[in-house]
Picture 1 (tube, rainbow, N blue to C red):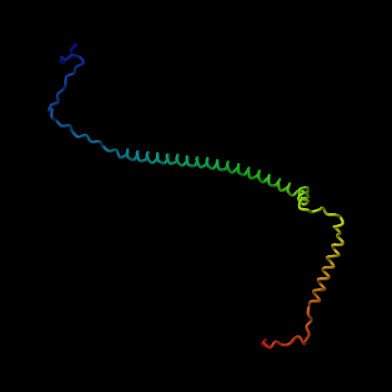
Picture 2: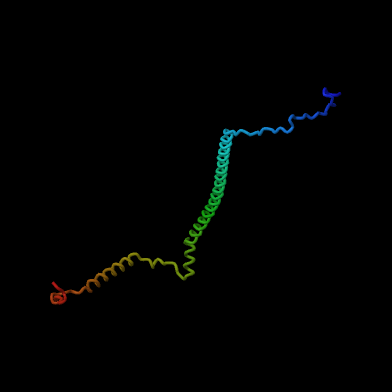
Amino acid sequence: MPSKDGTPNGIFKMVRRVPSKHKNARVTREYDRDALTRLSLLLVCGLVLAGGFIYAGGRHFASLRLGYQSQKLRAELENQKEEQRRLILERESASSPVRLERAARQLGMQPMVASQVDPLKAAVETAKKKIAEQSQATLKLPVKTKADRQPDPNKRR
């Protein structure tokens, strides 16, 4: 069915502009100063948020690192405690009377006999030594007389 202007349906007639060489007006966009402020604020908020995530990530990884270090130190402490227990047992076994007696016999030592220990004899001998030392000390002191005391000619008064 033809349209009112006589063209078949679906085909449009081109409209000619009058005058055909008419120039369009320049379209300029208005600058939205509020949009620049909003974008700046959005950028700052985004940077603060990103910085917070980076800081939180750094703290998270630092806490993980400290956790691993403390776990490693706990294991080292446990090893050192076990080593200390082993060394204490070794010291105790080395200073046991049975082992000391065995080592003394290997060196050629013999066990003490009761006759070797006489507390009274030892006390009498030490007293005799002290008396002898004191008498020797008194004998060694020279006795000076007035004749021995002559004035020193080099000494000035």
